Length: 284
Ligand code: HMG
Ligand code: MG
Image (cartoon, rainbow, N blue to C red; front, side, top):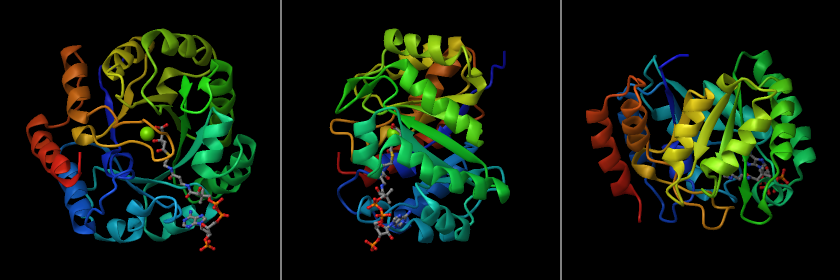
């Protein structure tokens, strides 16, 4: 199997969305431009969501319009509905992502609808994006644990993943939203998921609340996954998941996978400087 690991940098979106102090738009642009020079191929820049729900990312359009694009990088954004997709298209987003959940309560809290209703919004969005050759990624939150419902059954994740793949998502990012997954619960999930889905169609998205993210990535590598989401400097957390902390830090993931003999093509020297800058932007 391939020894190349793809880093999907989500710091500018997941890392900043929950930050209470208003971060200067110019600083966000500086962060994304600096990340673009590190050798990372995918950067999740922002979200086209309601600014009432996520005020920190209300400047998504302006950020997209003012970053300096590196032709080796795909610049992506979250889009929950057609309104989001239309805004993303007018900002020339390279790739979009829909975000579903395996927990009904989390779905309600995060996007104000049930899982089934979320698919009503995703059908036209994914259809239209693919018609315009915009790739669509699918997130699933609460893959093993939910802040409201506790343990989540692997069958609930498999159901949502199968639907997203059938609709045309090229990859499913498995969100350990509150960082409670561990190799045992994740192992049970993979036993179920990998019976139907190729590991190359999956990505790991681990928040590092409990310090288990690297162990979870180790297991995921063994199972054949080769894409991991991370935030430079370990920034982040989901505003609708109480207690959720940052994504695992990009620099930690790179150090870990390289120690296991994988390559990422990311310059760790450049990334270290970006990490210092990222941490200087946030309050804690
Ligand atoms: P709603 O209130 O049900 O939507 O919110 P609505 O359709 O009834 O519209 C209400 C208002 O929102 C209207 O404006 C719409 O125009 C506006 P008003 O008439 O009141 O002025 N609106 C929008 N504005 C901008 N962009 C849009 C949009 N859609 C409607 N796309 C909605 C539904 C989905 C919009 C809302 O719940 C929302 O924006 N939620 C976003 C939540 C979010 O971004 N959460 C964090 C990301 S997910 C995450 O972090 C997890 C992840 O990292 C994986 C993991 O770790 O698990 C991905
Ligand atoms: Mg997340």
